[in-house]
Figure 1 (spheres, rainbow over the protein chains, first blue to last red):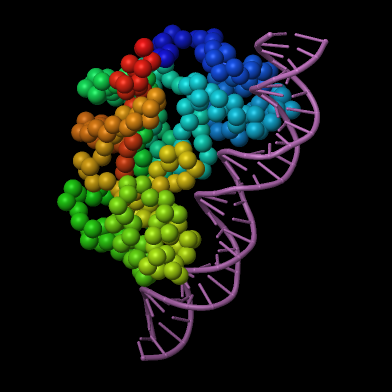
Figure 2 (tube, rainbow over the protein chains, first blue to last red):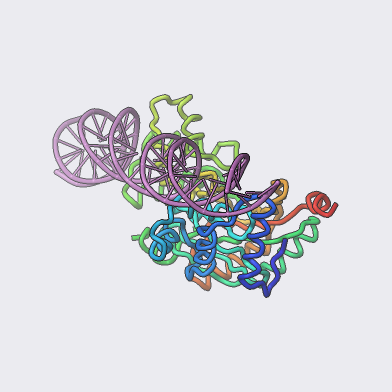
Length: 156
Length: 156
DNA sequence: GTAATATTGATATTGAATTTCAATTTGTGA
DNA sequence: TCACAAATTGAAATTCAATATCAATATTAC
């Protein structure tokens, strides 16, 4: 299922509700709270820990395991993407709409992440997909290396 | 430093030796053994555990920590690259030479992975890196979606 | 409402990654 | 070659994110 470009948050909520219904899971207050917080989170790549800390301020009783499990649920129903930047903790982000994708320069020295836009990659993806008879929903382009600061540090 | 296309193993060894010299580290038997085993490893993405088990057969006294630290060293001097596939264990692979990269179409229906070449991505990487003052060692381009077989299955 | 089932949250457990430290090895300079 | 300083090793301990456990609770279906 491809989310359309104009999909508002309510569409995501609908997708989640549909998934819960289909899988005979249950709607809970916690899932709603985590949903709101996750999709309103200002940072791009939130860890379970970070989201948990933020949630606890409004809702002290929420458990870490619940946040962890709910992000896993969002992942299952393709509302969230899990990333690993090599610092030992998984990071989650909302699945991007068409045209919203951004790619990453990832410094494997200090963990710094630089985002950049990718109109050309979008087009490239479409071509490759067509050649291979593939239906592409999402892509991930990560360039790994060292930022100037880390290269300087090493060369000292 | 970008390894040239024709770089043989001895060039890598030279690069390692240079790094050791520059950083005033020391050449050791263990590092040589691990070097040989790592760059001759048949699989694409070896874990520390796997490499350790393989090494122990020839060299029972070698320690896990040494393998771990040596792979970290290879990473530092840009001879190895660390990947995370989300199974909780880091995997290492020799840094690819220019033009050797391959990218992936990943079917989220059946898990099938199709590799494809990416001359244009190479060039794109170089441009973006230059703009951001980044030293790019490796990249990962993954297109997620459904293969034709899964699409047919869904549309039935 | 009741029963069946899923979820929660606190806590315990797991396991990979990393650190510690005494013993050993290596490079440097006389 | 020798001795000293510094780096490395290997075993074991520690750390920490991810995951599992389980009794109490909440939700859904009937």
